[in-house]
Amino acid sequence: MNYIEVRNEQFYYMGKPIRLRGFGVGSWLNLEHFMIGIPTSDEMIRKALESSLGKGRKDTFIEKFQKGFFGEEDCKLLKECGVNFIRVPFNYRLFIDDNQLGEYKENGFACFDRLFALCRKYEIFVMIDLHTTPGSQNPDWHSDNSYGVPLFWKYQIFRKQITKLWMAIAARYREEPILMGYDLINEPAMAGWSLINEFYHDTIAGIRSVDERHIIVLEGDQFSMDFTGLEHFKDDKIAISFHYYPTVWHPDLLDRSMDRKVRKEKIADGLDRLLAVRERYHCPVFCGEFGYGADCGELAYTMGLLEDTVSLLEDRKVDWLLWCYKDAHFMSMVSPKWESDWMKLVSDIGREWSQDMEKEQAKKILDLVKEKYFTKMTEENRYLLQFRLRACLYLLQKEYIIEPRLQGISKDKALMLPEDFQFENCEVNEQYKDFMKKVLLGQEE
Image (cartoon, rainbow, N blue to C red; front, side):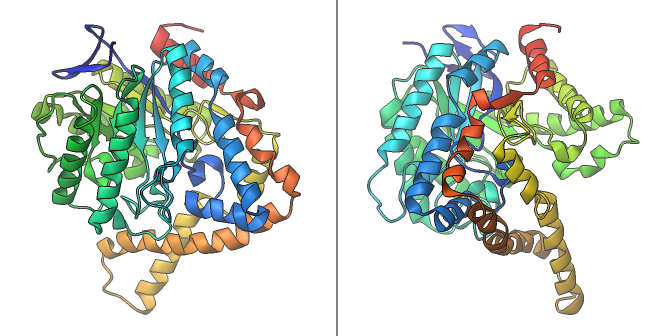
């Protein structure tokens, strides 16, 4: 049986080099607020659903969402665009119940079984990505962190729990040919290299005890951008994934007065600094996430940013995954129709909440605290505390934004909301689609 292989700094398949390019399928198995247009973490969104609809209906809601979000028609579109690679983020709770340790949920394996069967049919390789952990591996919402503190790195029992989960997954899928590999943990942060390397060492050893075939993908510290302390692991099937959101970390790049050529040069500079890791590790180094959202500006402008970044990756022969394939009209190729009930709900919520509004609220509160009470507060203090403060805001968002809106519609209508993410109820961004076909297939529209 053939599997994706690692040879020096390239991926190979059936004895030949292969370029892997496609999308992250985010918010399918781990809800992310800005992508679905509903605030708070995955855990708290589910709690809001349960308090508003009841436990049984909440379970039905999530089941319908997971079954309908990604299916055969989605694979057909990806194949039509020339995509041969997807990254599928998942929440550890897909497999683990925090109150029933020692057992893994069969529903998680059933979800992966269906995913692999679909992708085998359409010849699209899959990298599964653990996007959340018990205690959370970074302080932000996308690690399903409801508290703003990454406790995964404080408690070894959490890390051992995840090593065992990866062993169970690897044992189940060690002979799966469409599986590219295991992305061990998404965007670790605030850990320290000794703990990250210890976790990687233990988890690599655990996986290799049951699966010697598949690639193991490692990410860097500081949200997968820092690789300064990463060990050289003795394994010939390792790849490194970095994430690159230049306008998030350098918002000045969105200055409309900046010449496009100058902007592209600045994006290239940051990219090349990340790619320097290839010289140290001599293994495949690829971009596991990048993209530009509606907060960057209108579609024509964001498409220009996307075109420039992809051209830089292509020039450097770097494999890549765009973030993301499907969301609620923020940065995706596929979204629910604007007239859908889901988008009406998102539009209503948008009057009171957005990710930018949330950040601004936290900033103003911290400004007040510094001015009135702690005048010596440092920028490092502010950076760490803003995650905790935003987590406090989640409680208010749940109670005063999500729950009233869910309670304001009938329970039967609420249970129909997930259907808006089914492909037949979605619309495709044709400009985005044409761009992908041009890059991946050389097709000019």
